[in-house]
Amino acid sequence: MTATGAAAALTSAPAKVILFGEHAVVYGEPAVAAAVDLRLRVRVARGPAGGPSTINDAPLASAYHHYLSEALKAAGEDKPVAFQVEASVPGGSGLGSSAALVSASLLGLLALAGKADRASPVPRETLARLAYDVEAAAQQGRASPTDTTTVTEGGAILVGRERGPGFLWEITRGERRWSLHKVEPPAMPVVIGFTHERGRTATEVAKVARFVARTGFAKDVIREIGDVAREGAKAAARGDRAQLGKLFDRNHNLLTILGVSTPRLNRLCEVARRHAHGAKLTGSGGGGSMIAVSDEPEACAAAIRKAGGAAWVATLGAQGVRFE
Ligand code: MEV
Image (cartoon, rainbow, N blue to C red; front, top):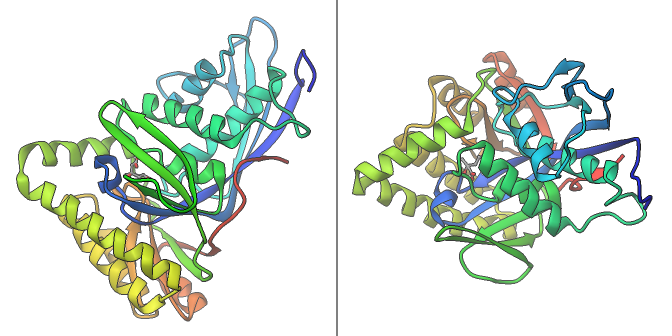
């Protein structure tokens, strides 16, 4: 590691899918997520002295680029930085592009500061904690560490209340506490369908928070999503596709009741189910993406494309953040 730091660093982080438990995990229920082999790449370099920090050559505005502005603060960087970002998944697609951007950018910023390089990478736990703080700040405090830990650590992650096998670390915020675990990624492809509608995590999480504050019914739905996620974690460990599909459908219905699905998400789930054991929205919803578990993934992806979505057949358990 050089004391002065690198002039530039090239890093990448994977996208992620939440198999079970989005939204409910914010309230302490379990969730299962996996990194997928679609990556976001960031080149972080020193910008011209006296100029603004930039993203893809445009000035960085804290009103529009919350995540990068917060990442600069978290890394203690006060000199101009030029970020060049290239992503295989679109922003707002519910596939963790913000978390991947934060994690990959933080690693690059630490390299510029001389605190990390290929030979002495920063511990993943340190990065995951920093990335969570950045994401929570950018989302006005409402976030679980699911996305940031998944894209930083890679593989598959089980989030729970208690420590169990595969325990990685614990993250707390206020009265909430999440125990993060590394689990075996289900050995199966997952079909991802993007609606082309962009969702905003902060908006959807705030919507659910208002519902939960108003009614006991919403709290019951959150608890039931937790039950589905507990069963889902077992089905994923067994590689039981039929059961996973049933649980995807149940999880999707519960998320629809919470108000975070959209007609397009419902439509893509419906067409995917003709070639799948089940399908659900993934991530925060309000647009974004859905996933399906299928024995004929290419036919399932083709049906999603025919219905107007973008589709990928992805492998679960990609490598976490890294230098390229
Ligand atoms: C977003 O990918 C997942 C949510 O559960 C929010 C979070 O966990 O911070 C909706």
